[in-house]
Length: 429
Image 1 (spheres, rainbow, N blue to C red):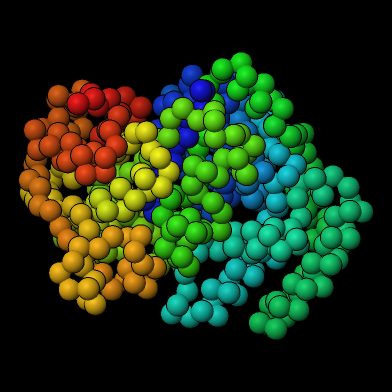
Image 2 (cartoon, helix red, strand yellow):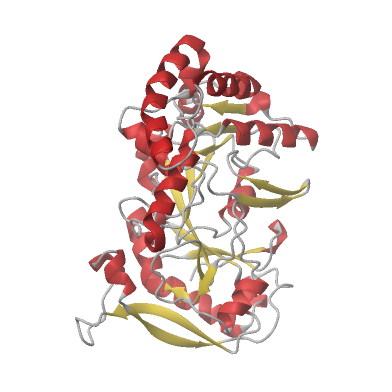
């Protein structure tokens, strides 16, 4: 079984890109199956630092093919810019890149609509990135989407745009936003599509051949499990499926091929935007996490909310996705803290002293919960120089072992810095 899936186990920004980069060197294919350019990942390798929003890892390995499956929403300008940037830095990717023509396209009206929806909600806004993801996926499921395949025929695109602008312009104008001109949008989309036309080709057959040949395939999930539309903290969620089960719809790979499902979690908790966050800290250790962890969004630049690691959430996402292992990142961010807390459940004001769990309620319910903590000793020394698990301080080792025991999933690797060399394998107990 040659497929490895790498998924965010929290609310995103867990450094999944670093783990995908580590594993992509031996992969025949690295693929994206969900999300869009509303989430980014940072990769540091021998070619330097790369901040990408659409292209998957694998770009630095000349023999690796990179795939964007039909579950991904494509911003044409973002994709064109990333392809050009890699070429300028000596990493041409066009011949190795496959983008499914089934991908839906982020049209100029989608970010405008998302901004209108967010502003209309006022204090109840969900904190989106305003990249248009909600509206593009809404169009997809309401049979109003425009796909890359539609862009190959100008007449087909013009007719679809005519219908969509008749509806969208009414909404834009009702909220004081100027209407979009059909011919201007048509020319703009065609010009951008021409920049990436050659990489638009269906990867399904190539992927099936790769699987049958038992070659390694690495799948890189965008966002994270707690942002899933169904199982996340809805409506403070993303628009696409973020779970392991999304690979069939989002890429065309059957579950029987899956060998490893790696959940990536920070050694603490972060979140961008609105939504419940029971273990959030405002100051003190939270400020340490923000500054030492450089917790600012890759796409938006917004500071992330920080707090103690929530093991109840982590156990839930492990069970939901069937994680075969965990990768724990940014352990070094906790080096200067004398005492650590880890969340092991919640108490709800209507349920007395009973310890309750995430899956028992919705986002409003979770907002009223107070975390139940377990205290752990800090290690008060740098972990940055460690290159083996047994070189970590004893308290750091104990922290790691407590996480895997509570979650019920082995931790296979821990990172103590941004470089590949700073990812430590963790021995199996």
